[in-house]
Image (cartoon, rainbow, N blue to C red):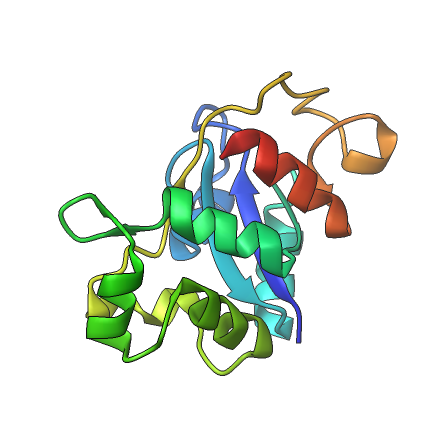
Length: 157
């Protein structure tokens, strides 16, 4: 099962109420927020609804570990560390957490009771966007991009 990294690229103005509601359900409240969800039919349906506001694709292990280490946060705004993962989740390290997320044994958005924030706050990408009004295949940045999401995430971390 694939793990999707979903990044909101567009802001609030002129957003239809149903799209705004779907973005809120996925916890994508602001621009440059990123969430992780498994590839499920209900998530794919939500992504189809909001495809003109977000980009998504399958995250790989190295990028996931980098994202968790650099941008993972716990309650209080403190960074996610190996010590915190050992204490709260009883896992050996962030690498083991990444493996469990990728295998589907754990879901990142369900770790909130352990004090881990479900949203990653990212920087705008180094080098900028091509276009946040066109789909990925047509020279833009919106919609499904597959494994190319890893390159974008590395520029935004």
